Image (tube, rainbow, N blue to C red; front, side, top):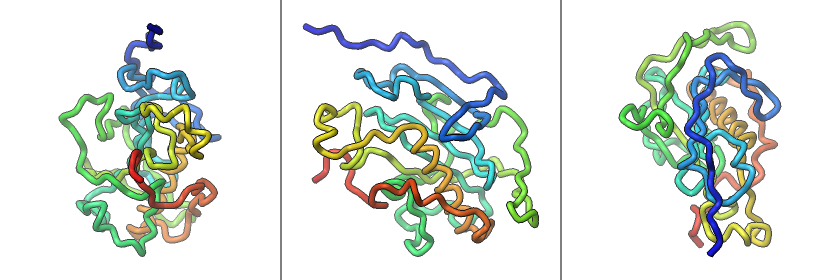
Length: 226
């Protein structure tokens, strides 16, 4: 019987104020964790990725999280504060004409999960005072978010996505499936932050949305559905 691959890394946390390079830019994570229990057993690009990464989007000031899910895929989350018009909205009730279209469409909405382990929670814990972010046109500043946040999220486990924890992984090329790595999910989080900011009337058209990353339909089937 073949020996199962193992991941010998112990759970680790980022050093405060240490820059992290991702998607052609550099951020200072609020949280960065490697969590071996979340890593797929198979070898792949996920071996070199964090399993949780949280940061503040520079352009909008919105908290963002990239988190690995149970089957090894990455999900993305962006939070709005109590002053945002979508605060408290169920993701299914978000008006379609607002153009909130992350990868696969929204599939998550909830307040901060303060009871869960910090390494796997959808909750933003800042390790430093939040910077005030100036509007690109120089006319406005984004004030610090209140402690009460409402998170919107998306998952990369659709029928056209490679899901590392599924047995079909060896058929991914034939099925046209692609693993959505950290660069892709980071870009999708950034786009979602811009879309939510525009929906809140905070940015108007001041920050363009990078539509080049929309390589799949905005709404798709969950993994395993037909």
